[in-house]
Image (cartoon, rainbow, N blue to C red):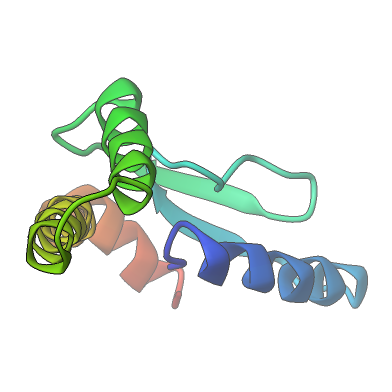
Length: 113
């Protein structure tokens, strides 16, 4: 169950290597992601989340823009803090939705994930 972003980009190489050694791989990911895409190296099991691709991309773009804004240290710090909080909320929501998805959890348990 990877985290979207740099963790996923690093994990992707490990998964490719494991697949080449004959392992069957399943990646559990929300239906809305920035970097987790289907691959021939693994199967992806998706679960729904209460936000759209556009909402997530917009929030990340706004956060990048905020980091380059000028202003007092306190003003910039508060903007970055609020931006990080909104981005973190995507991850928290994603985890909540995964744990509420009884069908997927049943599949994972039965397949000894």
